[in-house]
Length: 605
Image 1 (cartoon, helix red, strand yellow):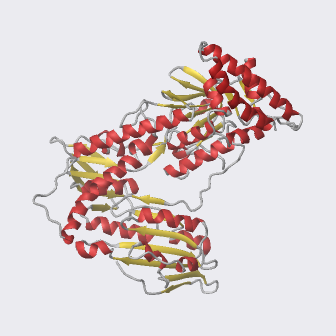
Image 2: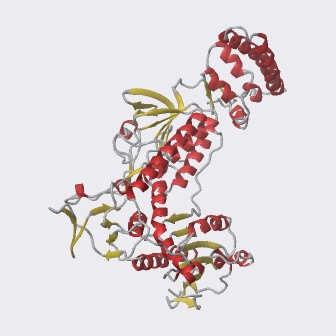
């Protein structure tokens, strides 16, 4: 009842007050408005206080207004209050978040309470949360913590295309020097293929299309600057303070930025990772993905060292735009950790495009030649090129963060150790994203940031859910995957059924290009649940996003089969594969043999 009085009476009174004192000075008008709000709020609080130990809803009109007028500028809420005003953030302007923003005082959520619900005044901090790093995860955590009523700040270094100890940028790796700019370059690299495909559909060109690398990079950078503005706007609209500079932990509750110390009840570390280069002679001559996205001109020939997804994506980008590409892979196959059939399939597809793979070769040095070229030295010889790019991994960006001063534990790889709620061994310090080296994907960092905000400020303890996370590799053709590989499924479930299909996509029937699509479904034989899906072909990431929902929901192969496909599409193949390519069963305990029954595949590559 108190909330009803406060919620409706205050807005009704305010138009009258504004008209009554419109000719007065704004400060006087504001004072009268606050006085009326205080009177209404005090009555609302008094009504509710007799009904419950927690003032609950009335605090939005009562305690907030009362404490504002009394000048304490702090409001300690119970979890009930937090839940209440957390659900009314869309109401403008008469909710606690809006009032706190306009009046310039802090509303604290998730306050400490005694065993009987009695309030305990928290230590006075500058902020409830300070996040170090404004990448995707840090921004997500900050925004939602603010929506839950916390006073939040994020510190981030100024933008530069290439990251360093003094340069970063709001948006982080994914937005500025990862997923987004890379995907834009992938689009650019696809056009030559489309031009070639169009000839089979009747298109002809009076002159061969030409590509201007500088135009691509200029337009890409313009888009990045636009996105930086979008991210800054999101923070501003959420009431989050953006502090420019490198954040460093001074102690368990203090972050130092440009010599200024800022205190916080909670600290979130969301600084991501950074590309690494092995310590070999000539390492100063190589570039990483950062530089590859900002080259002044496209090389005629490039050597790429690495067999992971970054190496293969850039191999496709440069090859698509006309560069001669050589890829050096220490292992006998690319994409360690992916399904074996996917690994074989994508290697064959890339080789068909003219990309040269040097399997089993480990570079031992990089030499700069007198003519400005570079030589990659391996135990098998030398390869000369215009540029050498290393895509041999990324490391958590934990150097010089002051973690030791706060007692935060790191693992052997330099990543921050966290529990299942993303909390470090220091009670009030959290870490999310690539700096924890769990699953290094942007959507995972977003999930971790949301879970952290709910746990710390939303009175809703939430663990990130790492089951059945879909991912993609934007090679040409792209790869999409969710769930278990065949090898991991055998280890986990024992008995599995494997369905595979390799086919020529419809578009290639007229283009005449040697394109193939590969699809694979892995089923737990005992439950009939689909536990893994792997695809390589045009638009497979778009297809996988939808099917990933079905896999996580636990749908069975029977339910897949009962779904009517959309024709003609490549995706319909996933609901029309009826006969297993092979059935893998547990080892016979007596003979030690493995039953691996084979069935004809729908196609072969």
